[in-house]
Image 1 (cartoon, rainbow, N blue to C red):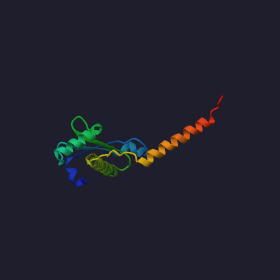
Image 2: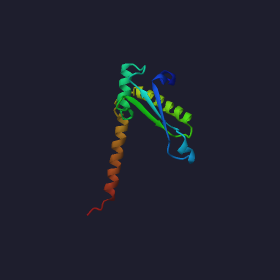
Image 3: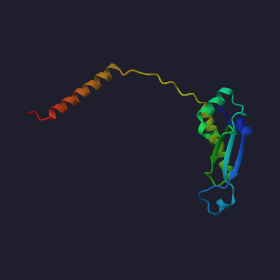
Image 4: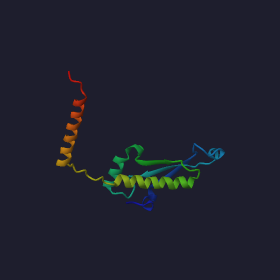
Length: 132
């Protein structure tokens, strides 16, 4: 698990005008934040870098930077904080190793119940049919 202080040296920000609500304020202030995280220069070890690159390929630019755009809030500072939180959660999720699913067999009792229900349903249908 990483925290934002470990990753800050490898983060660069770009700001621009945001769309959406805010009236005239939107047209004057650059509140949209684009966070760029340099994966190859970061302190992640090689295995972690590879995991992040494979699991977050759609968010990685050609130069190898992970891109996160945030324009939720009308404040640039809040958008920066939200982008940082999103970066942390994305990296921590990408590094999480999923549990291996173990195949299980249905129990004998559940199998018998399924077959009994099947027989019961078949008898109901036979009982509905018109015999000549």
